[in-house]
Amino acid sequence: MIDIIRKTLLAGVGAAVVTREKVESALGEFVRQGKVSSTEAREMAGRIADEGRREFDRMTGELDERLRTLLDGVDGRAQRRLDALEARVAALEGAAANAANREADALGEAARD
Image 1 (cartoon, one colour):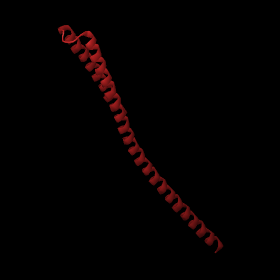
Image 2 (cartoon, one colour; image 1 turned 180 degrees about the vertical axis):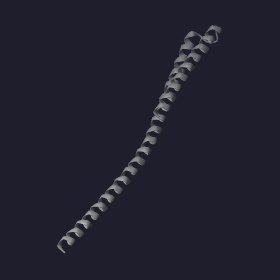
Image 3 (spheres, rainbow, N blue to C red; image 1 turned 180 degrees about the horizontal axis):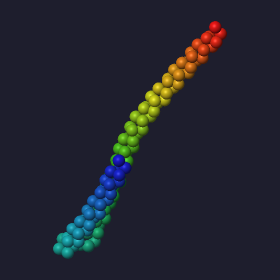
Image 4 (cartoon, rainbow, N blue to C red; image 1 turned 45 degrees about the vertical axis):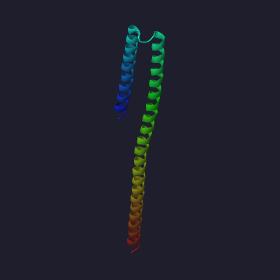
């Protein structure tokens, strides 16, 4: 599970790098064609980078929240199972103690006879 999450995050980082390179390439081409100045291209690149960072932060927060919800659910189920097992063990220990007491009582009565 952790490996899948790690690979997904790395894929996202890889996509961001490829996108950045494509943006820089496209803006460079616009500058060469005279469609925008180099100053405008830098400003656009900055805005695009800021937007990308905000989106990455938002998605990271969402992923973190979803993972916490998922893990809390798993932890809750595990705790319920553990509680049920502890109750069963306690019941079995009680039954074993009762059986031992009955056996001891029976042996005590037999010894008195």
